[in-house]
Structures are given as structure tokens and as C-alpha cells.
Length: 99
Image (cartoon, rainbow, N blue to C red; front, side):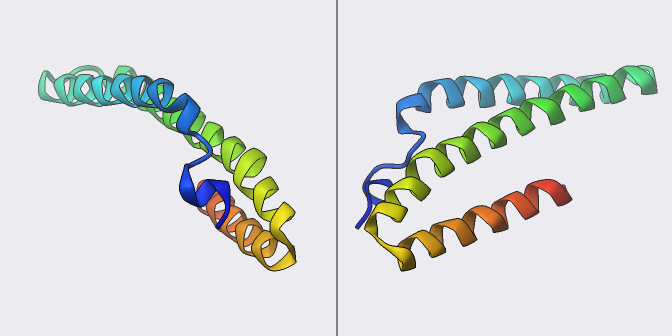
């Protein structure tokens, strides 16, 4: 069992990720308010872009943690474990690119 199965690679940054996600949550509530108050379309789109970028930053940080910790730990365990973690990473990257 790898270190990442016992403790996720991002755990040392957990508070930072939670803070970022809380900010995103606040931004989304702001978007809801803007729509409710019938704000100008371009202003709403600008905020949507900001939320999207913030979520992408979280995703890239988590991906970096996964590659740098979980994939590396699996590579130390052997080929089969490494192949599994690399396949997971490729699937995650594919989902991010498509979104």
C-alpha cells in the first residue's frame, strides 16, 4: 500500500485548498447574485472566467501533487503500481483538457 493510499499527496496543503475552494464558493454566490440582480452580461462572463481560472488552479495543484507524490511513490513500488497511477493521471488530465 503506497503512501498516497494512506494519506493523499495534497494533505500538507489541505488548508490552502480548502481556502481556495471557499473563495470559489463565494465567487459562485456572487455570480448568482449578479444574475439575480440582472447585471450586465459581460460583467457576469468576466466573473465566470475568474471562477473557471480559480478552479483550474486548484485542479492543476492537485494534479501536481498527484504526479509528484502518488505517481512517484507508485513508481518506487514497481511497474504495475506505477502504470496504474499514470493511467489515473492520464484520465484526469484528459477530463481537465476536455472541460
